[in-house]
Length: 285
Image (cartoon, rainbow, N blue to C red):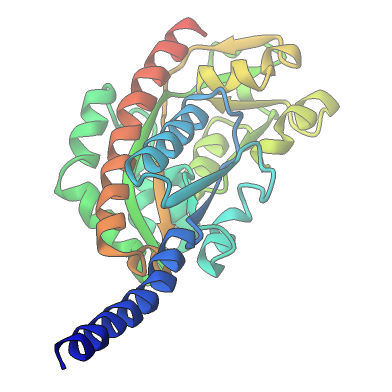
């Protein structure tokens, strides 16, 4: 009787173990969560390096449960297309400039396009790292966008094929801008003709004469070799360029809570590296 009971117990234990093996194997073989992270600038820019840093932190801290695929230089979408792609879930993360959110319908972001609104980067960080920055991110959520962190990239300068020393020097110049009512009004006030153009098309646009000049941060001028197609640069430092690391809200909210918490830390740590790099590269450029 004892032997039979013992044999039955062993059979039950063996059956239970056999049932758990496929579950463990399935968990071990589960594919990683893939994040497609698209952006429009070169990999060696501050934003490109910030995205790379996020990838490294995310994959390391989740022990491979998350895989981040980076698509720089508008490989997937141009800057005028990428927000719609995010909303549709075609990509999971972006880091667009703040100017992109005005046309999306969150007009409060247009304040960041005003000239000379921030004395320095510390003034910018005081706004974005506080309750104002958090409130602006909340306004993106009805659009299907989850704001995660603000990434800094420094102050704008201007370029053209003639010196820009006075307002009169802008008269008649076709100046490339991002899609922004504020930037459009700014160029018109200077007497220039604003032309909306994707960042990926800028070099060719300047080379062919479709546009005569542009504004941007020194690091982007350097990595995109704008100096090859422009004779003069004016160190105006008139406007501030910043990005926001964002995610498709449905995707982000659907992540396992533990994974989401880890990624929130990664996306906040990445700009510490990216911001320092932006300051260094802009100073060197």
